[in-house]
Image (tube, rainbow, N blue to C red):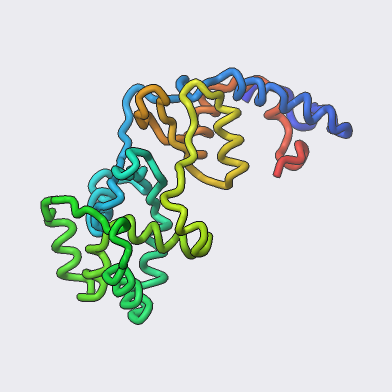
Length: 241
């Protein structure tokens, strides 16, 4: 990095000095739009809420992704994210709890609200999904994996928010406009304590990209001028975190 050595830096005794050093970062983030951040070529994975859970494992494996955006064709809207955390929770909550797993499956089978019944999606059984289920999963787990994503999402939302929120229907997906600044996008991530933020074109409702903290840091490191005196100070000096 270009700049004075640590022992040549002026001690930061005034909070205003810290703010002055950090101001160029804020200016940079406010000047850059989410559209500027988009790569020339990328892939986004979108899953229908009525897709059986077992196929999501195949999609994640084949495309080497740890998350996918969810689409609700009943409302024709993006409605959430399915992430590796969901897969971990599936195993932790149900795989070692046969009674809980059986109760979940029974509850999904006995659902009396016809409006909540899912519409099966005809999909071809790929070797990855069917061989995995037949070789490693118990019959009970196989039955669970044939349930749609919607059932899993509804159960998790009910656990988080209770019956009242659960009855209100599909929750909306936080997203940002490609014309929004990176500062705005980062603030949405911070305020809502989320790790990913879809960038959606409002005119066409097209999912363009999914912003993540790691990618944003890589973009910042590549484009922000490194000759700033800011980088001569430690995180402790700047009182960050």
